[in-house]
Length: 132
Image 1 (cartoon, one colour):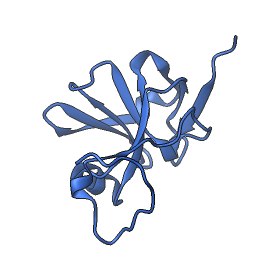
Image 2 (spheres, rainbow, N blue to C red):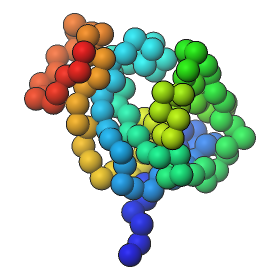
Image 3 (tube, rainbow, N blue to C red):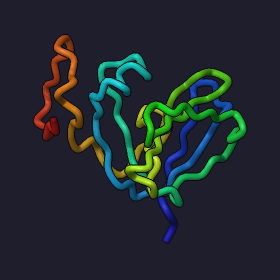
Image 4 (cartoon, helix red, strand yellow):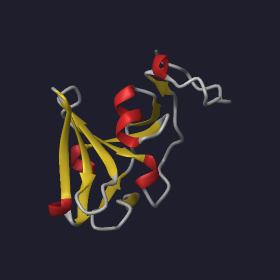
């Protein structure tokens, strides 16, 4: 049996990676840190175990920003694309922004997290669970 994988990269392609499926979860995040860091009202993340994530190119171009005491956000040092998240809260996981994956994954987004911070000017028309 062949493992299913999904590949991804930053905008310029200097950093590339692959994840082995199955993923652990996929969700839309509305926290203010995601909003500010990505310049977007919502960011969709997919989580995998650390051992399911592999760099295939340019790991030396990756930079980490400590966005809070327990968490760091990873971005490309060349183009600035922000696409990774890791935290002491989930030490065995890495989180990847879904749009930075080139291939489909094994699930659709399953809910909204930190929904109390959602922006009023974006109307969402889905019936996914909303965690405040």
